[in-house]
Length: 103
Length: 206
Image 1 (tube, rainbow over the protein chains, first blue to last red):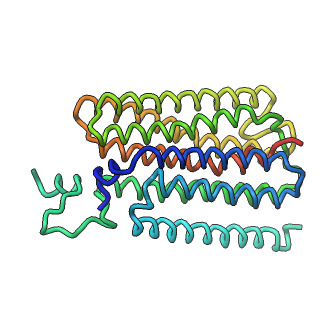
Image 2 (image 1 turned 45 degrees about the vertical axis):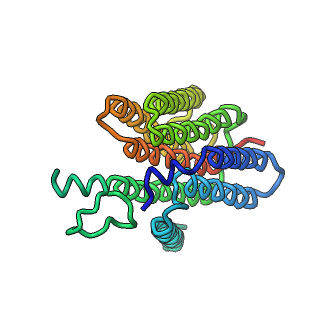
Image 3 (image 1 turned 90 degrees about the vertical axis):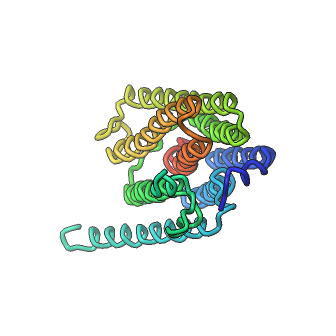
């Protein structure tokens, strides 16, 4: 069980390192925004950086690194929701654009 | 103390099952809320992505990143101050924990003020929930809905931070309660990490 004692034993140094990493990654997103690249490439690059940022925050700020069971539950559940959304939205677009009266 | 009270504090009573994922009940409740809210924001952002891709005249109205960069810096830094507050509470430094929690709340208020200033600027230019002067009205709908939902979370977080911080200082709440509120605050920060690139940076005018 993760207790207050466990958290207490970890110093603030690690939090600072993670904070500066996240800050640097956020800065990278702003740099990407000014690159002369295709919109889809920009989207992919920004999304990858955002996922890395979010993972760092989840693992170290929200202490999921110390509770692997909950980490897997979170990853699997959220992953399932995202996949279901991809399927649902794609299919709704197919339906709305594929019907004869859409044109 | 009743068995329910013991379970709320994450104490095993022997006759009851171990808490899920070895997480105390109150903390688990916050995690369930966070997971559900993740699905809500994921739904909004995925829907926004599909609408944006399916709309040919999607506008790129943002000319400056100064405000959003400042907002991002404030929110990220508030996560650090929250961590410092929680660690102070876990060390028994009540005054320090309260001070850092209030600094976090102040950062949240500053973030909300900057956000509202930006909204006012856009509204003055003619953008509303159902209309925008640069093209499809869907832009206004999605922009104000997504950022509004996040702003609502920030506002709720500020209220929670102040309420929990005051009760912690008064001795009614413990360090664990502050940590649970901190989890929510980090989640608000995490959502912003996705809102910034998708809603702001991809709509930057070049």
